[in-house]
Image 1 (cartoon, rainbow, N blue to C red):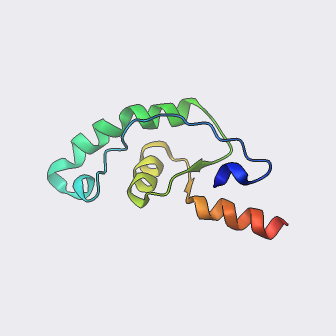
Image 2: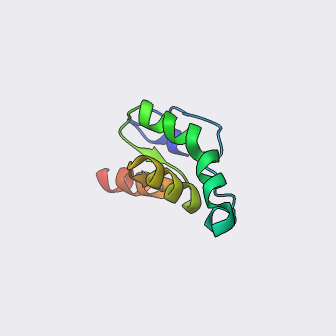
Length: 86
């Protein structure tokens, strides 16, 4: 759907897991492992500056923001912006 929006170029950074896995990363016993799992993804986000990072997963959003300091948007935000710009 996002590819249909004029002016958007999509580049996939990684297939790596963010380490959240539903409630997995929220549990205290899994916290460190969850961060370790997300390490490669967060490193790739930091190493590949872009205008926007987008995910439809709330857990991924939280993990990427915590691991990189980069704000992450839900795809519907881009759809809304394109609609309002018409």
